[in-house]
Amino acid sequence: LLEFAALKFGLDQFSDIIWGSPVEIETDCQALRDALLNSKLNTVHARWRDGIVAYHIIDVRHRSGVTNTAADGLSRSFMTREPSPGDGAEWTVNEDWEAARGIVQDLFEVSSSPSRTNVPNVRFTELCTRFQYEPLFLEIVDTLCDLDSDQPVNVKRHARHRAQQFFIEDDKLWKI
Image 1 (tube, rainbow, N blue to C red):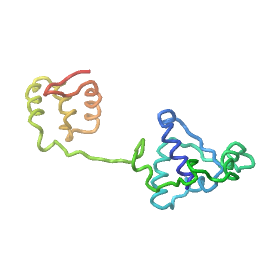
Image 2 (cartoon, rainbow, N blue to C red; image 1 turned 90 degrees about the vertical axis):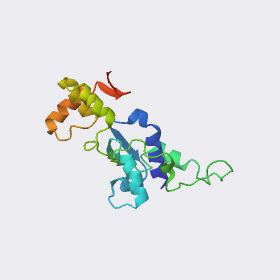
Image 3 (cartoon, rainbow, N blue to C red; image 1 turned 135 degrees about the vertical axis):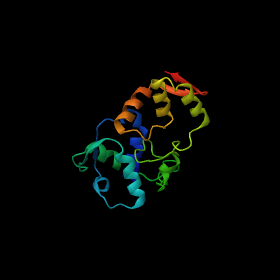
């Protein structure tokens, strides 16, 4: 459990550096490797694993403590010491510890916004009226206001490409 939490914590802390880059995990904890590769986890561990696999992990290797002396020495360095106040020995991992911060790079969230296709906003109607004789700008306004949902996919893709340099603010169409 602690190794799992440590991996998630470490990935979250260095996410600005490693996000999108291939990551290889090498651990001396066989249980961690098995948990990452197991499809039958409890809900807490499954949530942690989902937060971990959002990174581009290409390999998870187990190296036993005998051959992985740095990790083994680090994990055993405090085994012979008596716990003292403030050294963290009393600390444990709360199962929802990451819930306060959330998943850093959440790829699994799907949200939908209410469609404006049926009832367009008044200001978008004014813009459409203003650009009724300007097909390029009318297409961009329709795209930015999501009014082109009845168009074929290739037309929408082309329109979205054109609209990338525009935005609507204060009832006006602006080019970046």
